Structures are given as structure tokens and as C-alpha cells.
Length: 151
Image (cartoon, rainbow, N blue to C red; front, side, top):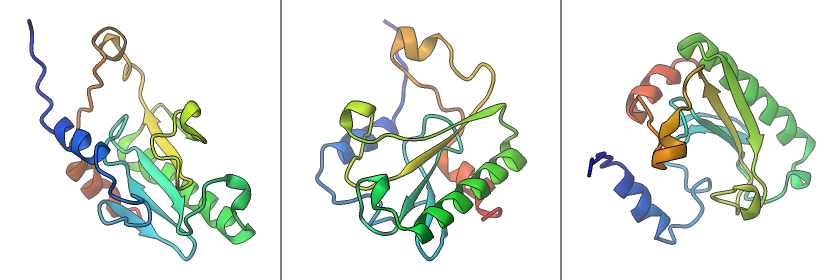
């Protein structure tokens, strides 16, 4: 049997098994920018390096609860995030979206948040399909250091 070491994964397992409150209301790590109504932060357990989440500061669950000011600033932060990722990481494309409800893939469904995932040709291969493993080729500290200057 071959072993694939992913020691950072234990942190994810431990966090997932604790009731630690709202990860967005308690935002402490990897916050790129805070606005008046929303903020942008790196995903602690990213799909790809540079996986940014943008969320309203208010603890709301549904997009229709956003007010006009929050929507405006949310999209300003999306644009800022895309621009920063284009400048620093030169991705070939992006996945940008909301997962609303557990059935839709929301890992944390209590606080509305939007994902911005940079994508590169060849970033998806047999590992997630055959091995049920995602390979993230850069540590989050390095990614944060690279992106913070754009925010």
C-alpha cells in the first residue's frame, strides 16, 4: 500500500468535529480585507491555492437577506479578488459561486459566503477521482503572503 502524507488534514478533521461557532463571525485567520459590510478571507482548507471566500459581516443565511449596500460591496470584493488572483497567480479561469444548503455542497451553511476558486489547465487530474485525494501545491501561509498586498 502506498501512503500519501497530508498532516494538515488532521486540523481539518479536528475543526470539523468541534462546534466552534461561526467561522465567519469569528474570522481570525487569513483575512485579506474587511470592508464596511463584507470581508474577504482565504479558505483554510482550499480547493486550489488562492481559494478566497467573501462574506457579509452580518450573520445571514440566504442571499435575499442581503441589503443593497452589502450586495454592492460584495461584488466590489469579488472584482478585487479576481484582479488580485489574475495579477499574482495567472489562472486560466475561475469558479465563482454560492453553495446554499447542505444538499448544494455548503460545508458551512449557517453564514452566507461566496467562493472564488482560481483554476488552471490540468489542476484536476485522476487524484480526486481515483484516489479521493486533492493535491494543493502551495501552503496557505505562502498564498496569504502573496495575495495580501493586493488588498
